[in-house]
Length: 441
Ligand code: GLU
Figure 1 (spheres, rainbow, N blue to C red):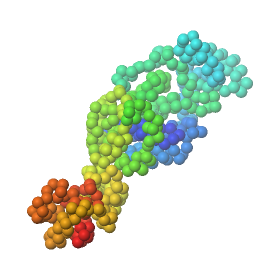
Figure 2: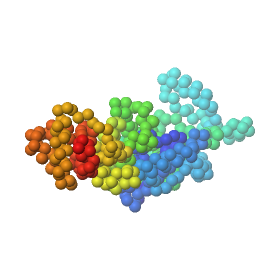
Figure 3: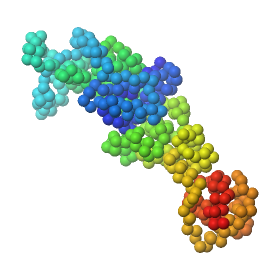
Figure 4: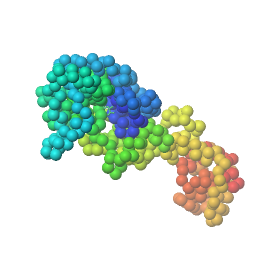
């Protein structure tokens, strides 16, 4: 059994980096078929900033992407469990209470930095006696909680992506896990959830590498086995720089721009890997070929222009069944125009052109007799699937024109466009009557 989870905070909309993290976890689970589970865990311990609206937008985005989770968990519903584990860890001496104010801590950090020392918390709170705690309590000063890092607890792991990895517990401050107001920070609840939910693989961004070292210690303190961890290199913009724009581009923008969910997946599944990006039209090839070990350690470039090109390439061989319900085109019309669109919506433009009326194109003077000739030929032609080749063959013989001179004026007259779908396919769709009209007959 493989259990993965995607754990966003519902404090905003998903951006492309989150989508990639979700995708990697989804692929890993789906590759196992029924032996894989993909969870959505809403990290909503920050009650002030978490909203149900954002939670819903996350669900909607995952649905749109075709990555509906198998189950959903909410941290806000698990507070009692976190409290319970905290008490157990306190009894075992893995966590402790501290009372320093942010100002005090800041001052101590500055002093250490001033002496050229790393700004690590000095653990002064560990020397507090029961009487000290009683005094704080009597004064109504509430403690915050820290987790005690230890060189004796595990601090190295074999990362699915980065290979041998470790942290040095002595170089880090004991993390605050719960604030004085009782609210939880991310670190410990995430571990408790991963234990309770049987998560086997934690795949997330490289910005969590240090957290993983700390969380390993928490798993061990809870007496639990740890999951496998994989940390994907972060995304950069097309220019290779960490870009602000990436933080704002997400599903609603993809949708507005006519990007297909499969295009987003096809690109993000291969970005930063040694595998090439392919214009697939279904999930299966992505799931089958997914190999987390192929992700590299270098940052991966997300290029919006590449996504658009890939989207067009995918549309070019997308089956009618994949767009039925989203287009008013018939299957024949779809097959005829899909090679010339950047979005499903754009197919409607071609449909309008096929059915007319179209604005009368400006045919160059020297081509006008040729177009009149074409009208005459078409009028006598046995109209059908072969009309275009019959028409052009006849015109070639009559006029001696060939290549561009033969085809281009006809295309312009018949479509009002200089480029577009294959004329052989669309002439039958335009129909004889309308074609004759466009040729000025
Ligand atoms: N809520 C955390 C985040 O979005 C989850 C990290 C994790 O996957 O453990 O960064």
